[in-house]
Image (tube, rainbow, N blue to C red; front, side, top):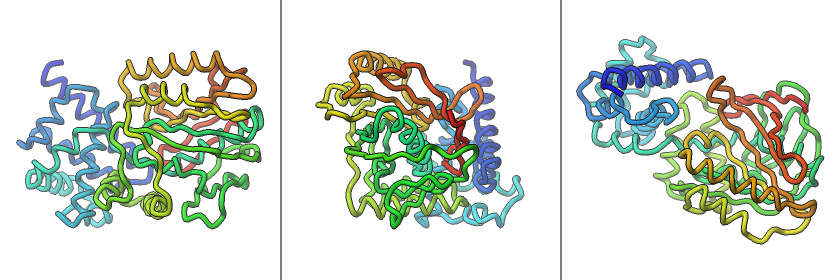
Length: 352
């Protein structure tokens, strides 16, 4: 791709992400993201790297990588110039552009590493869709589940057995949990079913340690500043992790899936591999390996030792976040159970 086309692709990604944030209740963050356009010719190392991104800027969540770095400067108190923008006090885009350029120029070296990896929002709100899928599966396969999460980041959703869920009146989990998952529900409620999580763990290439204040703050930096419900969920996750540390292995996703599928499988249990807004970040060869491993393990599944695959992932054609399920034996073909807001604000249940 020639340099002009690279800049155009980066600009399109920034515009799309800014619109997406604005349309999803975060107009202040949308303005900061749109301010990244000012960096494309602004003479910073960050701007040059964005302008000549070697991959696919939107699929790589490039604008959100830098958005995390900008928010972190405010959260840590390192530079508060963008704070009025996040508070909605500065709304003129030209003024925001100037602030983003000035802040980036002054923190160019510190911001560069934020571009090295995808954002790790580790959004607890997405667990509403996962729990609804487990309820649906429980009616077909039984209530006992062993859960295994790909791209678990800090392991927030590997603590979901300690969350309280109210899904349109269908409830699960301890009512006194600091993590209260109560999304707007569209469509019929999910089936009320017992869900027993016998074990839960995850993997990530670069896990975040919620017990480390700096790492926890980094995770918080990826949360859109004005969406206070999400900020509160991160704080609740940190509190739960202080009680019991999440079990997250530092491993490649495909290697970990191979390992988990070979592990001893307790009888009368469904082994579940699940992930949310992760698939797009995995290399094609990794995705292919996981698909083969799941198909091969599914062929060996029995009525006593079952296997399921639960995915809340982005349809790259429609950009809808679709909840799909496959299970073995008997349900090898994907079933679309619903769609959801990227951060769990709402779930649209199809009632299959």
